[in-house]
Length: 283
Image 1 (cartoon, one colour):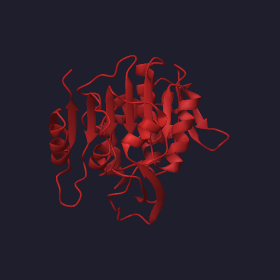
Image 2 (spheres, one colour; image 1 turned 90 degrees about the vertical axis):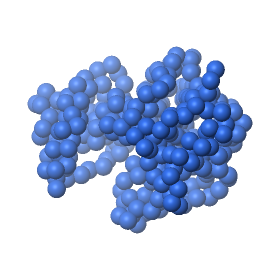
Image 3 (cartoon, one colour; image 1 turned 45 degrees about the vertical axis):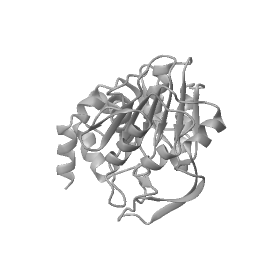
Image 4 (tube, helix red, strand yellow; image 1 turned 45 degrees about the horizontal axis):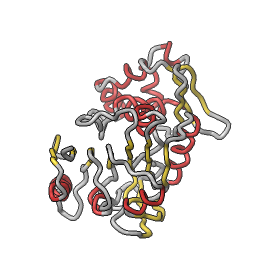
């Protein structure tokens, strides 16, 4: 099984891409968080997710990379490749910026921001003349999200620790045990015995509360709750949207439901690879 997983990572080129990251140093900081610092000064903190596959994958890296990348920080390096460098709605899937490239001065948002790897890229793209809103409900991920923004001096980024829903609610999030990357209101994970309660708000309330409106671009990736998020946004319409609609709930085709909702609001839409919706408003 592990050999199959490793061969998959090798085939997808993730080993080569880790070797191309220009890592300056890595390790575990005094707070116990693994980190990777690039030669350009950008630093990323992540969680300590250790898998048996990691030790095998680590052996595929060349000796130069292993000299600057500790095994403890391998998962962080993988997340840099997948979320910061590749920037897909899924690894090897459509790019989040496939139909719209973020520009200097843009106001953008990412919901389901995880630990901030993609949001950090957005922050560097818009520069301090723009604004980034990062929404992440998981408390552990949110701590690292804030840490990544603060450590990279991203004062133009607003981090929000709410769930996103179509009304104000107290919701139960389910998650795979010890896996902060897969948590959802709509999905139940068979492997899971972990859950936690979160406060959820509609996007109208969130954006009004922080006083920033992502009019240029919005990424929606909420493990089945994407349509609920969109139904809670009525005060303005972002000009461009990239939405992961990978999970059909209640027997409804998520991508088609989202597309119909956006068409009714005047968007031009397209569905890519069955599960990814891109939308834009005419200028």
